[in-house]
Amino acid sequence: MKKAYDSNIFVKSIPLEITEQEFREKFSQAGNIVSITLKQTPGKYTKAGYVLYESVAEAQKAIQKFHDTQFGSKIIQVDFWMSK
Image (cartoon, rainbow, N blue to C red; front, side, top):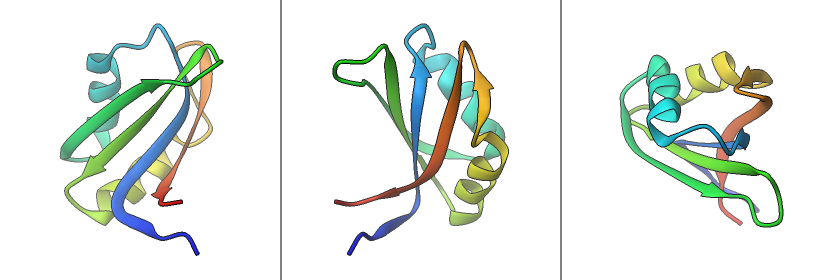
């Protein structure tokens, strides 16, 4: 069974041209960020990102605000991060 990590979100389909600073600026609109990780998706021309917020409410706000929205040249997907 997968477990959600309360205030950690996963963002996929981030265009490669998006910098960490741009990513941070966008997602800080939803709340106080504890940490950010960006990684290039293997075999694809996109990045994936993880954002840890200070609270669950901020993570929920980010999901509601940014899921299925345009970011650079792509539509991003945002959801709670789940362990495997």
